[in-house]
Amino acid sequence: MAAVKLVTFEVATPLGPVERLGALRGGRIVDLNLAAEFLYKAEDRARPAERAAFFVPPDLLGLLDGGDEALGEARRALDALTGEPAGPNGERVVWGEGEVRLKAPLPRPRSLRDFFAFEDHAKAGAARRKEPLQKEWYDQPVFYKGNPREVYGPGDELVWPAFTRRLDFEFEIAAVVGRPGRDVAVENAARHIAGYTIMNDCSARDVQKNEMVCRMGPAKGKDFATVLGPWLVTADEWPGKIPELKVRVNGTEWSRSDGVQPYWGFPVMLSHASQGETLLPGDLLGSGTYHKGCGLDQDRWLKPGDVLELDAGPLGVLTNKVGAPRGAAHLKYNRDGSYAS
Image (cartoon, rainbow, N blue to C red; front, side, top):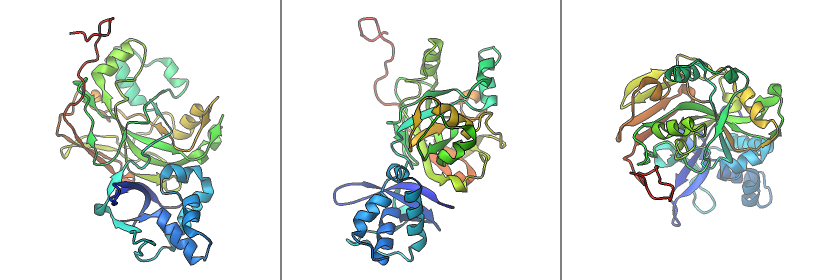
């Protein structure tokens, strides 16, 4: 599917909000499932609505499960659509970007693996601990498994759990797996990537620190929120390397990557993750952040009400406002389960 940015967007219906799969084209969002239905009607195919639901489902995970055939049909439907026709029951097929709410392009990943692939960031962490970067870091691309159920999108409030006083972000790029694979060779791994999106690996740094001291985690220090968006750039539109990344808070630039690339590339990360286990379409692989792509590297911290912008050039700008702390404030317990003071 060439030169396509895929989005998940929300439209209002009499039964409540509904998520749909779309493609950005000329500043407009095309509903790919309805576009496919129009295509099959024009081709005089039997049962066009059912055929469209099968070949071009209205969600990204369903489209990825359909493999190359589904992506090809979505491409044909997008190319064939002209004007702004209405659906069979008056549904809109084309929307302005400001008329709908963009969600995370992949709202429900099948799994989430987040790597630690930037050498400069890894070295900075070791320096804070007053130790050299472990030699084992250079043996393989290490990762932790995150929580695929707490995924947020562009414009959503950045969740601040009340149990942390050090809410942080990590500016990353994530690859979305597009085809199943097990024991994938590095030279074949790029063919298993459907596309790329911006990822914010939200972090409760004080909680994360405690977990790592105990040689476990990260877990609660990360699991409360991961933000994706604003769109998924398909792999054939990928520029071949991570573009320059810029962090802005309340309009002020906090950092830029100056084009630094991860020590471990996405094909190596995907190949490593697939050894001895099967990756599936919709699995998510985060890159980790570059040095100063987070507040921790700068000893600079977010505050409630801040507006965070993660700018990845052709991959878009992921914008979120930081919310106020909410929820339970306790993560320290006595042995009997009561809260520790």
